[in-house]
Length: 154
Image (cartoon, rainbow, N blue to C red; front, top):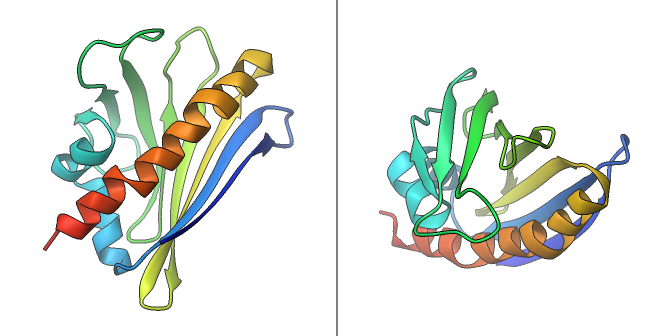
């Protein structure tokens, strides 16, 4: 498993998170882990109402009490290309503009390269959130819980 990480700015001046990781699993298997609610819950948060269908509104709810945020994220599926890409809006703080999370899958020999782009973190507080909290958090989730879920799947 190989990873690369970058937190930077996009064209609008907002900060973004870019992560790439290669798994030794087929793209269909990684897609299942990204789109099946029972699997999403094992590596990310509990999805309420999720379906990989454009326009679907859903909630990602954290497990247990949370400090510093409300404990859930409001989302809407923006793009779906089966076994290739999934994008959804991400509202963790309703006082901030929506973010966009895009997950793209690419063939990588016998495995799959997952590219995660989380865009739209506005201002210095957004930069801090991307750089100090969300960026490291995504890295940890992709390296450990998601890899564990993929390894345990049939």
